Image (cartoon, rainbow, N blue to C red; front, side, top):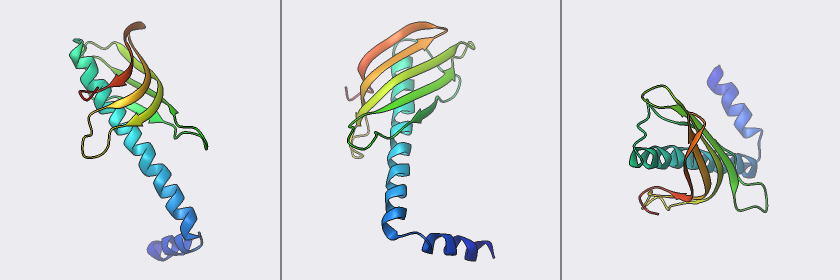
Length: 123
């Protein structure tokens, strides 16, 4: 019965609606994952090892805009709070997957440790 209800819900939307929402979700996931990975590598590069992954939320750009906000949180191995804030202008193509461009500030324990316009080895 659940499968039938799901099929009913999907057929109730126009194809354009489903594709548009799918594209938004896919792009948001790409932005969040790319930022998590690139920021973790950048922090390791300045001697700040993380206890696990960062948790990032990237809002897709508003219509007519080219960049959208991003915020990440996490913890260092010694328990200090890590926070990244900024905006994402672009991410590398899938075949490279090695940078995120925008404007980023990263703090550890309230102290700024990184500020820049690119994260990742492809910068």
